[in-house]
Image (tube, rainbow, N blue to C red; front, side, top):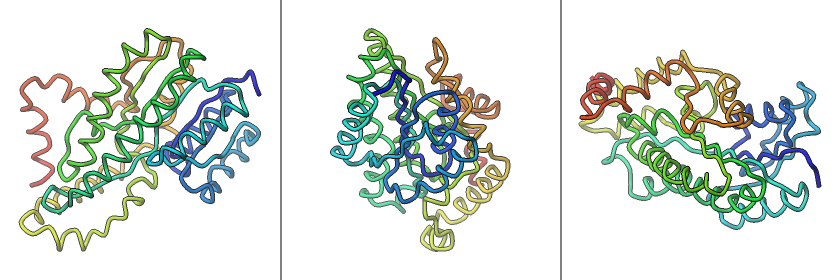
Length: 281
């Protein structure tokens, strides 16, 4: 057991999750870095070694879509460290395609990882966070505030997460637990690559939506050309982790703040629709 603060982070084999795990260790936390396949921990452990924080990293298996996996991981954390001070819900999966291109199973799969996985991990962690006066930090997306073409399933899940956490926050606060959502924009990571997109096949199957999809993909490739690094996106998450009174909603860049503000101030929806219609023509 340890008196050091302990944070559990989901989805740490690459990208933002990896960067958060290492940065939390640098900040003095015991960083429980979880992933579905611990054989993919090489990049994380290399980054930790380069920064001299390997002794603060604990790699564990956790699949947010498996209740038994979540329970087993949390049991190990409490047994080994005696406490849990924060949960960072980072695991997620992209899902590109419009409704006629996706099966209902595709939509359900997107919700399972991006929404229900967050709910399940948070529910399991809350008793321990109540005991420590801890916090829940959930990486959503600017796609949790602005619905984006060809991302209906993904954005639906992220909107659901934001609504869930916004509703949970005042209740959790009554028992001493802070809740924060973090909204990145484009991040230069393996997130998109891990979506397994076969663009020629997508376009061939798009039928009447092919011109719009082509325009969307061209715009998206351009936006990811100006993406944040995972470390840049992780920095506001570490600030939320260590702040005395973290904000409920945090964006990871000036661009993300401006983009999300379009939606939050858009009472009739016209501003968002005007913006996103340009992406598909």
